[in-house]
Length: 553
Image (tube, rainbow, N blue to C red; front, side, top):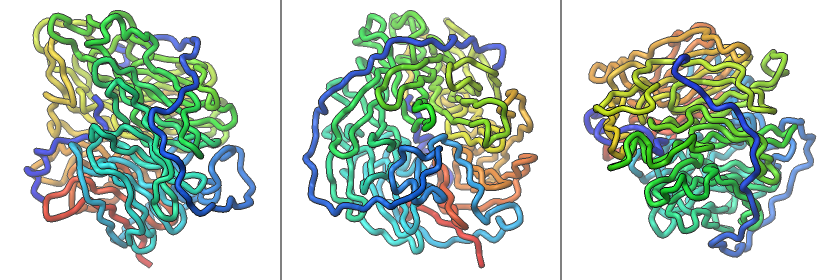
């Protein structure tokens, strides 16, 4: 692989944009901004074969889930495997005693590309099928046994990502490219044929975009827009799974006037899938940063948007059925450094040996929080990795800030047995107070090793913290953008340049490596004895692809 060629492409699909340096706003309950709406564009349902719902006994954590998710709960049927977004697997034969037997089973080409490659997501695995969406808007169904492409759908364009699919009620749900050649619609495709059933434009007239992987639950499909460009208020939506009609919406920017300057300001929205507590009917979404950052001409250090800019760079807990706000929290009020706080995972007490449930939130600010999921109360906060000048509320001279716009805890976390696993990308950005930064420009990637950390979910104490040193001579500090995926006593991740890694969960020691034929800024999915990695950035004549590894018998 030509490292220089791929380096020029940059790095992160998901870029929408210290313990003593964080002063989070207390969680607050507030009136909802949700309401019923009529979709801007809805395509009538096309004829499709009805998929019978199996008669199954539903475990409480799966209540409300589509029949396909219930039937394949032991596989990887949801964006982060389960509603709680744990990304943890304990029914696989893959562990520290067998991982060395992993070998390539198949590859499946997913042609196309966008600014950040073509794959920045977790594929879904349901029995003998895999479903995945590319950043070009394409959606594919793949034979999980052979890698054969079964059908391809979608309109081609480009998204920032991470994007991805959700499955339910005989349909595959995914972002769809609109007339601006960006993600503007949520579409439903027939699970068996890929035929489009409906498509709904949820971006309205504000030129915002969809970058999130949807979540299907209780007859609804949850999705969101990103809060960009100027004038856009990032909004969370619930769509009727059968028709695509908008059932409710919630604007993650509380101020309808965008803090007095809608011609300059924007923000909020979501670009990672939520966690959901089926027992309480609560939907948890991480929220993106306010914009512009750090400032704009004549408006230094975010002065165009005075105040806390609620609920940006924080977390909202919503009633899953109505969209009503139950509580809101800001990790970084009036954020001027692009600290999207977009990651959530729910650790219920019974599964994690805790005396109470804990909601974990994290993001590009490089700080993880533990919350009471019922109230949002902060139970603990832990800073990880390297931090520099990110405590500043204003500045005059150019400044280096770490984590930067493509750094921090920027890819999915995992929770298992009372432990949070996260990776911190130590990449700084250079900012001028009165200039607009966008898309991570000025970020110094591949300059410092990333940190993988294990954090006690009950206390927030760091159990272990290891630096990941690349074995590629040209890039010894290859950043880790592979998220966290727990499989038994291992946690899997990957470096940007395609080094697939397994770490011992007890110590953080790297116990397995595999070099992929391409670069990756996505995270794997696991079912049975198979792990699937998306490889989204490659050098021609190679094609972006899914790489399936399976235990050698």
